[in-house]
Image (cartoon, rainbow over all chains, first blue to last red):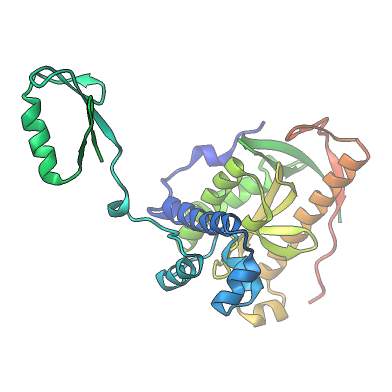
Length: 140
Length: 169
């Protein structure tokens, strides 16, 4: 293997390039995944969008610079989201394991100081995102 | 024009091995020349970086056709984006093996093509050269002069290619 010029870059990649390339690929992949799941093909999408199949084929190569308008139209046809914004993503589920009301609370497997678990639950309950079960509470 | 080239593995990751070729008697591969010429060219910085990132993606996921712009007769180019001025010519043996060559700025002015300017001829030469190299590798793989194990080409030696003459201006 010879020395690669790619490994002796004299500067950083231009800001945004990585995201641009990766997003282009991810969007195309996501459309292909949904089409496969729906057992539909590019011809179907072309027909529904009033485009030529060759154009859809170009879009799905993973390099097309999609406009939001186009993405929205595709989402509408497929009946599913292609892109998801962070605010739409549910935070990772965290379990609070409760041993007794006034004993230790485990947060992400790290024991915290002894706290009044009732107070913790009351605070969480105020957010409306707490589910209490017999032995644990799941924060969604 | 007959000349000899050597083929070397440049990089590998995940699904694809990247190969470059060097003319015998020269120290830099054609890809290195492309790199040295355009890495610091601010007029095509974005395009250059997109090509580089795309190569990273190809290495990770495979050299599928969808990554490339078709240049005809088996030759491909990066990036695929139609509005990119910069082109890097490639030849894809299959998703596991990609050969990259040289490239340059493609002029959109039809007069440039019609009058066969120096830049046009240079790009034409790069495009033809990678095609000839790619076809030669395929031929050597077929007659088992070159072996292959997964995405590694084996028994790589110097080989001769015949690059077509420039089109008449």
